[in-house]
Every structure is written in C-alpha cells, then in structure tokens.
Image (cartoon, rainbow, N blue to C red; front, top):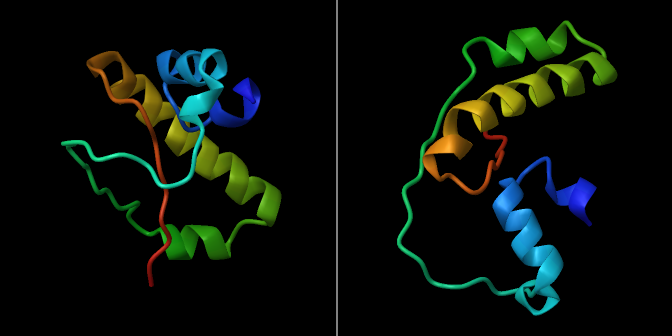
Length: 84
C-alpha cells in the first residue's frame, strides 16, 4: 500500500492511511481545499514523439518535481486529469 500511494500522496498522509485502515473508504469527505490546475506546454506534441515507457518517465518526472515544490508547504496529494 505504501509504495502504491507514495507516488500520489504526501508521506504524512501515506503513514496516516497505513496506520488507520478505516480511513480507506469510498465516498471521501467534505473539506475546504485549494486547488492548482497546471498545463504542460506542448504536452500533446511531446507525447506523440515518445514511446509509452518514455512518456511515463516524463510524466513521473513532472510529478516528482511537483511533490518537491508543494509537499513542503503542506500539500497532501498530486492528481492528474487528461482533458482534450
């Protein structure tokens, strides 16, 4: 569980979920949150020039840099959505 969630959740939240399995439930909970939407300039063109493994490495690098920027400030998750 830790390795699966550690790519998307802050270490403190991964530990919280590992220690409190009852928190793992569908449905979520109501919270006030701040959301940052970002776009990768030229992503479609970049992705068309990469094979699947290289594209995954590229996206993982983006997530890795995002975590380094935002988790120290208290962010607790990194999410991805693909939109046309």
